[in-house]
Image (tube, rainbow, N blue to C red; front, side, top):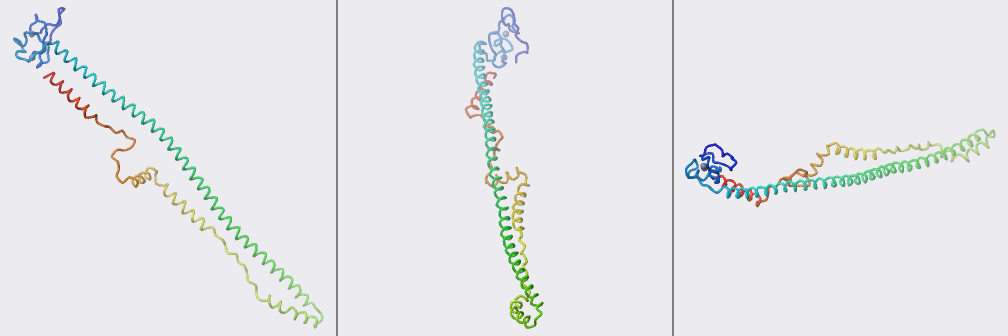
Length: 267
Ligand SMILES: [Zn+2]
Ligand SMILES: [Zn+2]
């Protein structure tokens, strides 16, 4: 191997470290050093493969050109990724906005449905109350009529009892007897059957509880369950994360080739 001494620069150009009067003009490929024309013959580089430094420089310049092209390609790749990610971010924001608008519409519809249901349930209560009140009112009217009849009969019976003339009293009593007998049995009492709205309340209690028990489960858990039902096979990539692809085969081949050339240049 060559000594670690370096070539030195003089006003006349680079001089060999071993043969100081000689200019360096060759390149030892084994040691990757610039040497003078004597070195491969007499010096530490005896028998080493050499090329003209100018030729080697031209070869390295070509390599540098390829390296720069490769770096530019890689940079382009990163810029492409940035554009893609930024585009995806914009699309995502727009999608989130439209999804929220869609949800707002659905919830407005749901609220309207519930409002309608509340109105219907209240109407049901009102209608049944009105029907019962009507029946109660009719019963009150009929009871009042009966009370009036009783009133009228008792005043007539009372005046018969006041009759001083026995014949007159008996005749009047006989004439009214059938009517009196008809009313002597106790009349039927009207008990209003209570109307209960408990069934309606119970129905909506169950309805509310079913909804509450669903809403008690955290939303993300419910969505996950729902997704599991929808997708039998889970995708390996999670949406919203970044999928990384390896470079195309041509590109990795190019890189390999370039690395090999680099090694050859040294060896
Ligand atoms: Zn030399
Ligand atoms: Zn050498």
